[in-house]
Structures are given as structure tokens and as C-alpha cells.
Image (cartoon, rainbow, N blue to C red; front, side):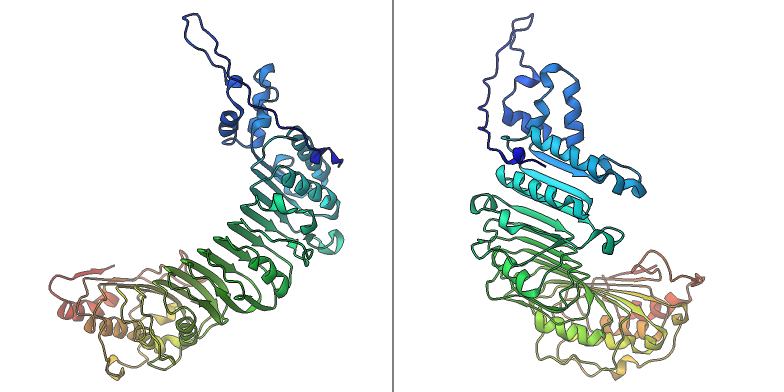
Length: 479
């Protein structure tokens, strides 16, 4: 690809709108007579492919589509057959080059590239980044997919930090990168001083290089990191991300997560159980965790130590175990926690430990809404093993703020019934209790699990006792 994409062309001044008269003497302004900023606003609502099609409507509209400030190119633009996509790489390159050539000297707010990466694309990807920088683009997305044979097509695309000059990089507000490699940037690289959103997928880098990049994003508000296998800690504490509000880390091989983000309001994590600490996150409203291979009480203790100020917590555990203990090993409590969702896959060998879930409630004295969603094998129906609620150590304080409890996946197991009764007996302000026999954790049952016939037997276990213990105005729903 030639250098014509990065040549500097003086931007055309807005053309004065012609005032035309129709047969009735009223002003008649045609589409192509509108100012360029108005045209850009209209065409920005269309995909590039549709904007280009407007050029066939009139000879006057031949170049009107080039006012579109949002350019998006995807593999489906040149090939619908997945098996044939590699054969259309050159066609994709030619199409992108042709469109960008028409946009030289024009305003481009967004450039998005979605394609399967191969070594043939490297020089062109670099040139397309040069083009985006020359137009001072605000949004840049290189959504590259790994090839089917990495040994044949090479490694990740190395992101060229050396092509980012201080002026152009200061314009970037949103950066999305997939299947790229972060190598150490040049010593004079100023970072991304005005970046607000950063989306990283299948990133190849080191702990030090990732930390160096993130610490340069001082205005970052939204951060997503998916499938980044550091095999090391992920830490950003030396330079706090004081503006960060949303953080998502999923399917990453990391040994520890530690961030300093005082304004963080939402945190999402999906992966193996690891220590997680969010310093100064006193405004954390929502936290969602899918821990794999965790012991429930240990996971809860870790969250209590790392996120003590969370307000709404969703804790989903896969392949987890329960421990036979009534309290968590922590002197702290969740002082701001109001809404809790616990989603548990209960195995047959743990059906006698269900009642030990009360250990979490003992460190959550201010919760107002509690949801526990059970999912287990059919052998859990009417399981009779486990302790009774009379064995629970006395509570210092009851659950005085709890008003709403919902339990799904109820199978008449003794531990489930005892847990429900314990909560109701210690929640004097309870207003709504829902017990649902359907499994709400996922839509489908385990493969091969027969769907049992559910009559009133399971619900009858708790119907009478609950009606006796609930306050007069409380609502009971048995499904």
C-alpha cells in the first residue's frame, strides 16, 4: 500500500448552502447542498457499504458518501463463506485501501477493521493505523481473529506504538484491540492521555508492559480484558485509575488481580479462583463473579477482604465445594452489601452441607434482598443428610434489614428447607418469600438428567412451617 493514504490534504471548507427556489417560490435545498457536518451526521448512521451505495442515485452524489466519518470493514463484506475467507484477503485489502483513499483529508471519527489475521496484512494494518492517526480518529478498533493454523500464519499482530505521535494519540477516546501483541513502547511514548474506553481481547503481553500501558491511561473510564494469559499478577496500583468506573476481566490466566480505582462502580470477573483486591473502591455498586474450582467459604472470605464496600454482589460458583463451618475466617463484614445473588452447582457429596451457607449471611448483616439459586443432580431430591438449624451458633444480630428472599432449584433437600426456615426465623422485617422448584441457574438440566415429576410434596415441606412463622402481611409464593 502506498503512502497516499497519509498524505496531508487541506480540508475543504464547508460549501455555502445554495438557496434554490421551487415552482412555488419556497426555498428548495437538496441533499448534496447540505453542509458537510450535516451530511456526516446523516451518513454516520449508515454502514460504509450502504453509504457507498448512495453514490449511484445521482451524479451529484458520487462523492457525497466520503463525508461519512465512521468507517467499518469486516470479513463478511467480501466473503460470506467462512471456508473461503482466507482466499479473499487481497480483495479485502483492496477494498479498504480504495475507501480510505477517498477519505484522505476528510474527518474520520472511527476506523474499525474486522478480519482474520495473517502476516500478509501486517504492512497494511500499519498503514491503516497511520491513516487513522493522520485523521485524528477518536475511535480505533482492530478486531483481528486468530487464524486456524498459528504455525503457518505466524503470531499475534504487534501493535505499532511507534506510529502514534503525541498529537494524534491525544485524540483517541476509544481503543479496541483483538489478537494483538503489546511490546514495550518507545521511551518517549506519552501513553493514551485522553482514552476513556479500552477493550483488549486475546492480548499477548507481559505484566510489566500491560501495567505500563494501563498506568498511562489516566482518564480511562471503561476497561475490558478478555483471554489475556499473563501467568502472572495483574496489578495497577502505582498510578491509580481514578476515573475508572467499569472493569471486566474474563478467562485470563493470572495469579492475582489488584487495582486502585476509587470511582469503580462495576466489576465483572470470570475465571479460576484467585485473590482479588480493589483498593479504595468505596463506590462499588455491582460486582459479578464466576469462580471456577473454588471452595465457597474461601471465595467469600477473599471477597470480604478485597471488596468490603460492594453494594450488590452476584457470586456464581462452578465445580465448587462447601465446607462444614458456620463462620467465615474474617473479622470484617460487608458493611454496604444490600443485594446478594448466590448461584450454586451442588454436587451429591455436598448436599449435606447446604445449611453452611449461613456462614455468608453472618458477615452480611445489612442485606435487604437475598437470592439463592441451586442447581444440582436429580439425586438431591428429598436428600435427608446434613445438620439442623438448631445446630447453628446463636446470632449476635438478626437479619433485621432483610425484606425479600428468593430460592430457586428447591428439591426438598433437608439443607435447603433448614436454610429457608433459619432465614425466616431471623428476619423480622421479611415481606416476600419465594420458593421455586425450577432451576434458574441455567435454562437446561444436566445432560442425561431425567426431569422429575414435581408435585406438591417438596413445597409441602415448607408451606406449613413458613405460614406459621412469617409476619401477617408477608407474601409467600410457592412455585
